[in-house]
Length: 451
Image 1: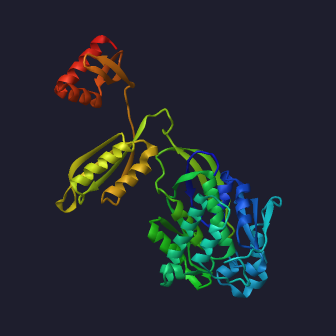
Image 2 (image 1 turned 180 degrees about the vertical axis):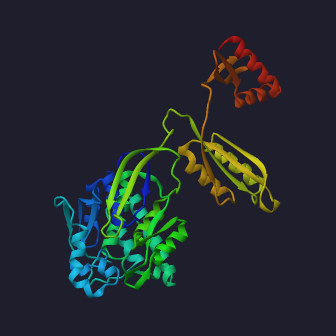
Image 3 (image 1 turned 180 degrees about the horizontal axis):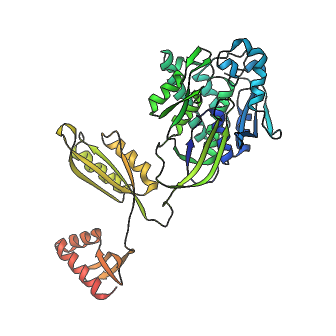
């Protein structure tokens, strides 16, 4: 992975989303093309070459990622006549459909040939190859890419397997992919995973997927749009779908699976800055240009100029007091700034507790994992908060009872000094005097001395 810092990716899917559109948009954002080429060279799959070029869509200069298949591997994915059932013109227009989709390329771009490979899932003898999930995972596992990219590629394919399994009424390990198991789809998914990993994307916002209407042809026959696999992914992962009056399939199963695998939020910040834009071209020709726009964004106010803290909260009504006490200790030990419980009444008048945690952004994932492991909650809410804090330091001062740590806060033109709990408690135990007496003595002496 590149050394770039973590970024937030926004996918604007106004013309849907597919695998090749996603890869092209990510390459346009700056994903390393050489890294991708090295991974594709290592795949135990042959019969294709990849090409990255610039094309014109609706007068816009956009990036195009093309997986060019040998004749025996062709699956008609970009053949508009085949896709929409015009069999009588298929033979004479098949080549034209591909040529038109790529006909605006300015210059040759560059291609990379991937010769026939050997091993499980490698060889093909005809177009309608069937691969099971195990064969596809073997291909991913033997590619020379990072663990992060492999994990994401596997996640995308498992999402597809579950969606196809539901559509056909069989277990996921018995699904044999057709279009999704084809060479170009395997290359698209692995390429998307490699590019996302290379960009360092950890947060991805996908507000809505725009989809067309009508029907589309696939190996199973003529199906309604959205096709069953897409509909199942949208249902399972809560993706928002907006159906348009445009005829055609804008959201492919590969595109929907990528969106489901990488999405961390559907809500854009109220305001944000755009750091970079990438635009990826689709191959199919519909009444709206097939363009996926990807943006690297930064929420306004997230710079170091604002002092921010995060609040995590969850309601718990079926967890013991001992468990709640233990989780508070763990959270504080692992970096939480503060932890507290508030008594609440939940649905059906159940008495419960609301767990509130204050923490920094980098500790969110770690602390949420502790809450999920140690309590019975199934969901945690997050809230980013700006705050005003006094300038403060912690100092060690000498007192008549021994050394004590005090918090020194600047207030206006003066300072206030507050003895730290642990120091007061330790001196109280050692002297046998009450906590209140020791606290007052330390506060008086450190303020009077001016230390």
